[in-house]
Image 1: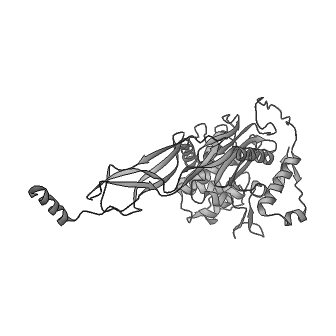
Image 2 (image 1 turned 120 degrees about the vertical axis):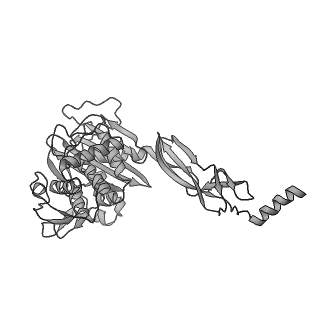
Image 3 (image 1 turned 90 degrees about the vertical axis):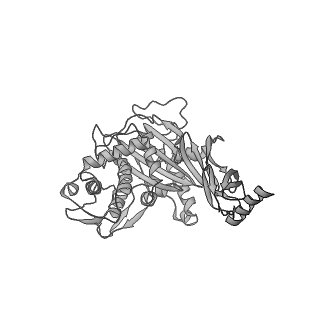
Length: 402
């Protein structure tokens, strides 16, 4: 494991005896603790960085930073999170999102000359290589292959420019309004920018997609086309080893952007995303952010399983109304004891018999700040039998003559 300070690598040394006696979670905690101990213990002096007197994390060296609860988008800590910054290779988070939503992971992608000649970090792809889209996405996210991003962009949209427009449109749709992409890999361009807050929103959205977490949380993987005798790709995101529950997401660096890291961790069902942009100590900063986030957050049962949620009218049955209840429990994050969730029940005006106990008749939705964050089915609490035709006729005759 390693961390960075002003371009220099220093080793994190944990004795083998200690590692062998600890579980994986304890090892992560020990490594993270060792990283923090080696970081500056006082407020660091970073050229041009002016801290607010009430900054809760003065040891963080990043110029822009945020830690967010992914499901609700709730910000737990921020520093200049809306300042425009260059994202470097954290750009590839959006590249991955577009590829997952627009592409077929089993497609075979043929590498073109433009992709093969891409500058910067590379997988050493060659013109004419044929690799599945899925495998290129692993290469792009684990090894930060700029050549893979171009191959992906050209395969899905026909050109990098067209793909970048898809990226920007998706960012704005997610709510990342102060973001503009002009390429798929994050190479410097004055028109290619984002904010820490926008990157947190983008990464949080990613965790709602199938395959996203699986790819960004993979530590190592081998493919026969990798041009190394081991054929091994190892994730450059050290937080997967350093932090208990670490499950994403992407590193980045250019001279213009500085050291950037979007990291993430999940504990007890709570998914946090942390972003540091232009950081001197990005691993340490990210550990401090995630630790702070988890210290501020807990879980609460917002909706109990099988809780009665009202009644609905029934037509074609002797029963006039039918009780409904929630199918599942909903447990959501709560910050400093304040939940702030709103519930909405969607039920039809009436349901038609026959209805069996457990049939789905509606939906209970939970929202935070106007955004739906969870839902559960509403189900019938009992049967509602259909009226017999002959019994209905008999009842009608009785009402006429008796």
